[in-house]
Image 1 (cartoon, rainbow, N blue to C red):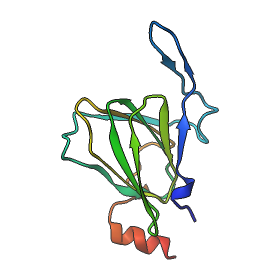
Image 2 (image 1 turned 60 degrees about the horizontal axis):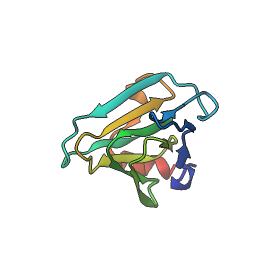
Image 3 (image 1 turned 135 degrees about the horizontal axis):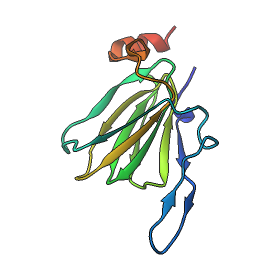
Image 4 (image 1 turned 135 degrees about the vertical axis):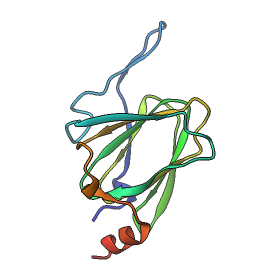
Length: 135
């Protein structure tokens, strides 16, 4: 059974240059092949995203610009991780409830997912999530 300790902050390899840095996400940084890429932007500062868990999907969240908080929850423990550096991403494993909030102005969250969209993989009700963790 997964818990919040399985969620990890991963440093993204980068090439430093006085003309600007280059961050590189290649296949050896993640424990899965990327099958879906999407990003969140223009999120109002008082809004939140997420509010679900996945049964099988892994996600790697990268703050390309600005900052936001990720609340992770394993039905026993909760933790807030602030993402604000584009060379550090958060790997969220299956079985973890997540909510994203406190988006700064201009924040962009890139998500690299292990699977294509499949509604059956989502747990969207928190009570159902708690029940799934007790089985």
